[in-house]
Image 1: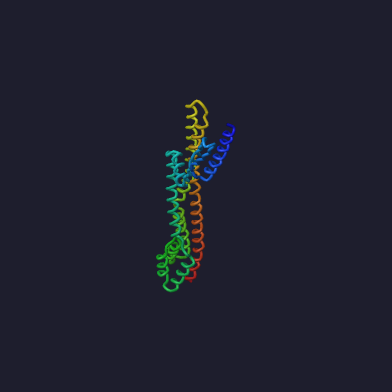
Image 2: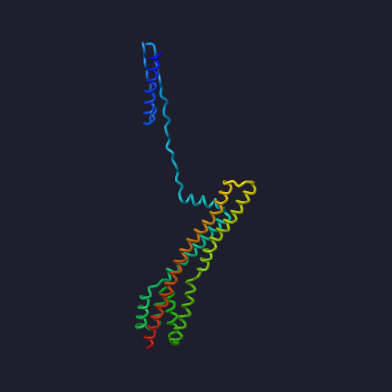
Length: 269
């Protein structure tokens, strides 16, 4: 009996070692050991098959999916208005950028062309050059050339007056863009306040301050503020670019107008 117990112990150790190797290797197999003593005792041990470990596949959420999910969680009441501010504001910014890029002119080249036209063909030839050139600078030149026979004082006044009109056209819709920059975070804060009120109403209805109720309400409330600030930052970047572009065009207009008046004075002499 003692010898049988020793044999069973040895068999268990061998079987446990083989089972460990099977699990570490990732292969499921059955081990069968037969031990015979005095041709009458047979012990059979089968190792349990190791269950294959399926790799866990985690689907990485894309930025677009996360953004859409957070937008839906924030609520359609305020998130839709904030999105509308972003769409309309970006539309105005793109329109201004296209208009300002089309208004940019190579003033040095235009001044040279006008001066050569004055020498060769006179006022009408110079006016034709201005008509064929786009941009506010060419329009100012045309107004000055159209009144050159009325005296230089009239020319200067017409150039200054028409320059002010063109500056107003360059700055068109900037007030609306600044409005959307200001109103987007305000709408976000309003959504946050209303969301906090809803969270406190949920606490009052539950009769207990549950972290789950408070956390979910505050999360939804703060999402509107986050999206409002993001919209304001995006529009502010475009607004600053547009303002700098307008300032550059206005400075170019003023500098080139001085050179244009000098050309007209030389021509009149």
